[in-house]
Image 1: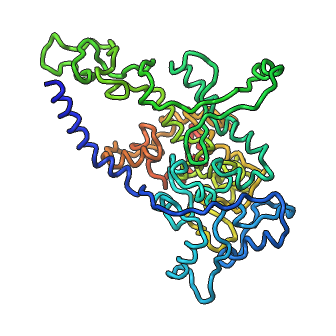
Image 2 (image 1 turned 135 degrees about the horizontal axis):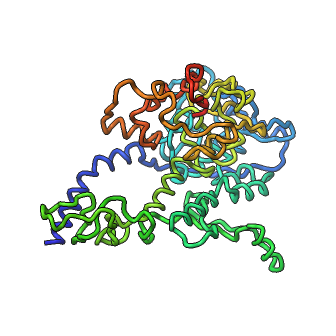
Image 3 (image 1 turned 120 degrees about the vertical axis):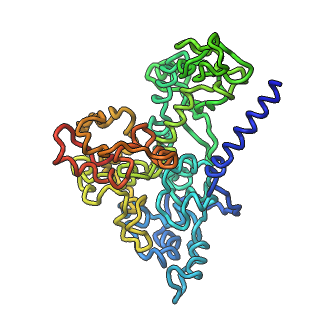
Length: 473
């Protein structure tokens, strides 16, 4: 009977989840393509060779802020050196933008995505909340979209910057070793403080162990004492490691362990007074089913994975879904500036360009009204603090915010300006939509559930008496 009941429950749950699964996979169907890998960008070449590799591209893109993205005239690179694609394709006389002939030429010249719906192809703006899309996408398209992405940067930039690349992919910005190490020890995932977990991927998007530098035997002790780690391994899957942790279960329950799931949250499920659960007594097994099923998963590890995707490190793109959150991946995370903040104290000269991730490029093919584009096709070492805030915005807002003089809003100060006048009761669809962008429990009921309100929240400051809001979030 128990096996039959288990099968019935599994079937009911499976059918209940079917619409959710369909929704989650919608628009993520891969298109089979035959990709041609572009040659690595050269360290040196003549100006003529570089110009030839841009000649076809410039028949559409006509002009750009810097052909090589470098301001130094000593750098001779053509468009296809960095991005790949076919520079021999040219816009024919009489072919107008938007026509079927134009689109055919564009698609022949460009490298096309494996997941066009997820990239909103043919639009070039960064997609919102792309999560692990870069790991699933073809590396040829990743290089076309962002040559500085860590999966492809050695091909695009390694001829000149290999040393910097190797340091960058091993930095805390990329690996997150301090975040994962601290969280793993403090939440009972690992029993020691030695950091062994870090984020790294191969060129095809597979999670990988990343090795530290080769150290001579006589220097190993000194190097270890300086904090240099020999290697970092990927974060384990939350459903496959042992479930025992300090968050064993959140609900009441524990005395009655049935054949299936424990009756957590249902203290009198069978209507028998003697089976009432004892408050505060945890279910020591969490479920009678196997590890990875029922409640037998590692809660801290799944929370780390959620943080990794909702607050991504430089292996992934920013969320690109609200003011202050626009950026790309890899080296571009810092060195390609986006419009993220209108306050000159945080953005200096970039403040004049707003905080909606819109471009001011001279390239005529870029939509200046769409969010998710960098300001210019230029690498910069003049990185504003607002660019740092895209990543350094963690709960509870006490990382870079304190450097700027901000702290977390307490949900009460100047509340009439931030909460609706009457209690809101959003339906499940709206709650899901808001939490996808901002996974904090209060957001669906506050005015900041509306991105348009969020864009203007700092404009309330002259009216506020107890708090002042930053412009980047």
